[in-house]
Image (cartoon, rainbow, N blue to C red):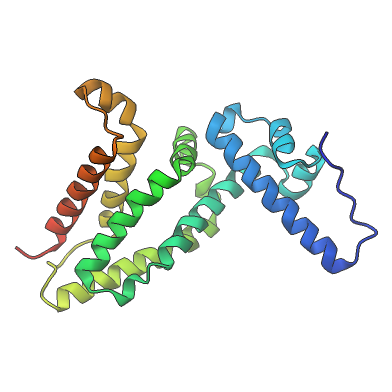
Length: 219
């Protein structure tokens, strides 16, 4: 049975830490539940059991299953943006930075398949949860600004062609990785090739880097 959280007798600092731990446990459990079953199939009872908390605590912190799903999506985007920030792309030469972002995106998607399944679920709901989130827009804006600065620096150095939209470029980077991994079962069946072997992964990443750099570099 899940533990009942009692905080009234605890000092304020300990109550705050306990609340933070509980919310984090709920978010992690909800991430796994939503990734496995989608928003429609996920059950709050199952999330409570995974998190080892009382179901009422989930509603206390997150109000509804939809609000919890949005919180999971926001955390998922915050996690990938935080990992990208550690790359220090601004410190790299422009071409190296673009290639590193492409490599990172591919590797992150492989290491975090739950991120892709969460996005699949949100797209089934036409992005209505993310559309309500200013936090997601604020989280993603620095990446686009960084990419714009890298593209401009490359243009000024005579390496990159002008007129490259950073949003379009990032959508292309993410899209080439996302489509391949999300559709690997059908693509493997259609083409009669296992697209998830280490060799296939290496070939895909090499192709992605060639396509992206071939687009931004001046001919």
